[in-house]
Length: 353
Image (cartoon, rainbow, N blue to C red):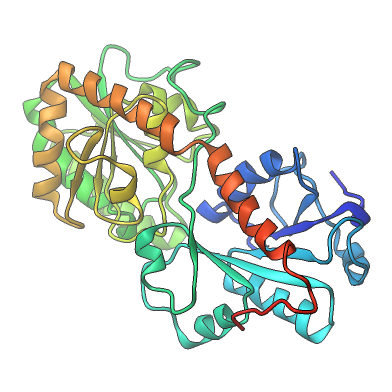
């Protein structure tokens, strides 16, 4: 869906064709933001229904928007920060630059340079903010409660079985092997349960997947630990899961626990990403050390054993998400950052660059 550039207030670039957590954030947020804001995406691999700025319209950004002193370029990747710097500082377009940072590590010199050129920085968690050397505003991601919820279609799989779910790309950094190890320990003791892993393994991780499948087959559990591959719609799967496990070794933010909790599903997660800020430990689920399969199994076991505990945690998870993590809250807090920039006179506005 093309846009009228004169009414465009915010550009949300997406310079990565392959689906990622960043792309998912843009896909969910932009339609909501577009209800009250002139916003458009720019880049490949995005759904057709999103408002889009065409590459041939970029020269029109030299003209200020109709109702604002400048446009905002909201980047979420280094390459998008760089593009914004070029457009603003080299081509002298009337732009201000915002970057959303999810990384939980010390940034490399190049990233630190780019961050220093931003007019505002958003961190997706308190943990992410701690790694920034520039001022930031913490805005945790939200979840689309119209899409994710306990009511609606459920994945038609494994009838009569209880299911522990795990969703995401299959690779070492996502802790898929930690989850499988925990399941190899627990499933023989819980014959009514099975495990489902949704998500794909890219070619470079096909050996990792094959090794996991070999371990599962050797344990005689090939019919109870299922790899679905990439699913067209993960929403019915979150409703199908009786317990959700998020085992990454490393994560930026990590949306899947929010999506599970919004579906009324308790969550056991590693202490990665923003999971400690999402999951109320001991209330909506549990948080365990990263990479510790024994600790993960010990945290999962009570939920597999006790339906009352699962129900209480799932109810608490749903209430927590509805109170603290609606997508509208995230959109409103981002809009507040935009408005703070717009409220400053372009002639006097000081930036951190």
